[in-house]
Image (cartoon, rainbow, N blue to C red):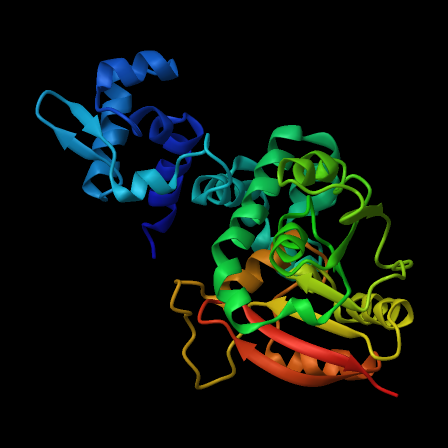
Length: 333
């Protein structure tokens, strides 16, 4: 654990330089890699050798480096990948926020806001386009890796129209509409859905299949769907604001409407703390706290209580075999 940040920073630098992309089809000497990345040969060699010892690359005779299964995961020029998620989590702005965690525990400030003087989404979504691109691709990657397991256990085809609240550029709703043939609505903050029409078009979907709406879930959620899906969205809100969002969901849904919460749950005491995919929810909860006021990952019971306060009842809990759990709620009469 003490050495953890050494590894993640080496990974970030190599991925940010595009070295996994360079090595995906052929081996290269360190001199050739240095030339392609505008870095110094000898210092780059020390970094690449360390990553080779970690199994990220392979070092061959003559200071030649080649790809591995791990480095293939970090390729960023062929769609959303672990590489995008890695760079989002470990980019300098995130490191700066974590540096403020100790003081924020004493002051009550959000560590990210303390470090940057701006809210997380304001910083990433409106002022730093490179960071915004990383975030969008990181979220799409998380959806892509979980979707097959999700669709094996939950049937969205029971609904006529599904609305993804907090759906970013639309990866999840695109999958749902294409798989089950229902209509879709994508709802998120206006600057979050700016790239959605282009993204959805690339997925072969038009505005008649997925309607894109910009707005604020804390103020009002549009009507028109018989089911609302939220993936990780409630993690960013305090309990008070979560109730505001859920109250808005109830107003937007018909009497028989459902809310499908897709969430990684913090295990109760005595349960395994790590999911099979390596996710440790209690640690991820700290990340949410670092970046969002009042935001953190919750237990199943905590979500159940928040939904009940907002006028919903828990119908079923379905475990997907990954760190993503399905909680289905119906409106109380």
